Length: 113
Length: 115
Image 1 (tube, rainbow over the protein chains, first blue to last red):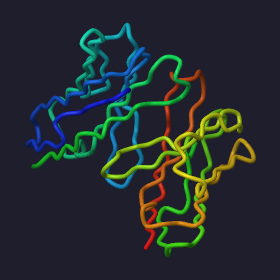
Image 2 (tube, rainbow over the protein chains, first blue to last red; image 1 turned 90 degrees about the vertical axis):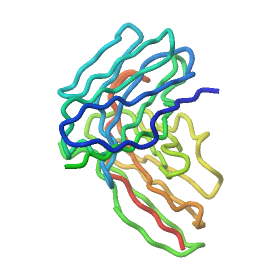
Image 3 (cartoon, rainbow over the protein chains, first blue to last red; image 1 turned 30 degrees about the vertical axis):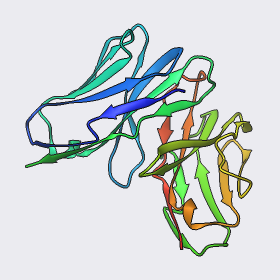
């Protein structure tokens, strides 16, 4: 069964600090992995999309890594800001699965002043 | 572009009533998705359309749920009759491009509360 597990479930950090969120998946055969940011009361917004051949991708202060061998991904946030407070959702798709995506349940990040 | 537009943003109704959620995808996008999000289960795909045709509705919970896409710029998700366990946030998303690789754009969601 395709699954996506994220850790930690929640995280509190101080403004200006860095943090790393983890995503482990069992989706096979792998097609791509996405990270979304979801602010409270809003819809998810795409941060990155990574395919099998990509192992690092950056979007401003967000850097995603992918290890297709160990089926792990991480999202690193540098110099956190209050506006980074949100849920971060890891999403994986399998080749041949049509448009079915497997969603993680997210990591809820709170950045404190 | 205004993005994916959903209405209503909030709906409170009583058990047994009919609920209709609406979605306007981004112009030019050829696929539309309906998702449901709860604290316990996260985001779950209910149904998706490609070029207005339903492709996979295996995520629709039961016959009380139905979805239509009469044209490229409008879709509805209907629940009849509604039950308290249907309380959730329902998201519509749209995409242009190849299956499985195009970026998904989500609306702001419709928060449904069934009393």
